[in-house]
Length: 163
Image 1 (cartoon, helix red, strand yellow):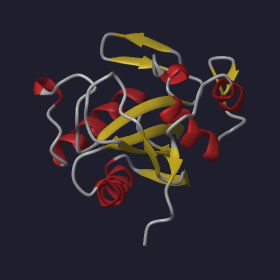
Image 2 (cartoon, helix red, strand yellow):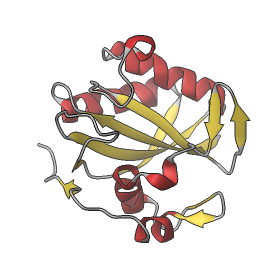
Image 3 (cartoon, helix red, strand yellow):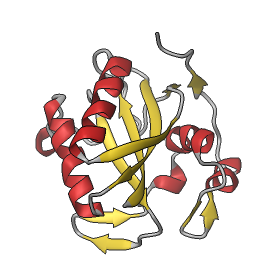
Image 4 (tube, helix red, strand yellow):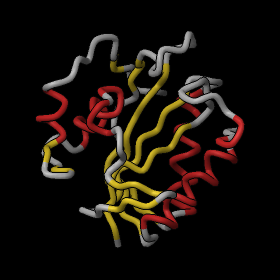
């Protein structure tokens, strides 16, 4: 069994409802147990495109899938919720974005999978929810809490718990 950290994001449709359904899909399709789930956060869009704010969250799961199979499963779930990675605008609007942030202490550098996620330490919109569930988690020799302390969290707002 592996311990995986997964980021959820989206800014099209009923994002928080999509997160609930996507998490159920992840647990079922990845043979996973939910260990932790962050709050949802409203965050400014990344990449300089004019678009609606995003909602972001993170989950920690224990899964029987290896990292490659888990990433394949996450992409399959994104597609189920309307994401078309091949034809979308980079950093553009999306119904669901699932990023595999870390898997145990794995370091993988392959064309189809890089772990830890290559932009993890640049993204406060991921680190804020991740810090809520795993502040002391060390990834690539750095604690989530310490990395987040060096980033601006301007514009990131914790949302009230969903009904």
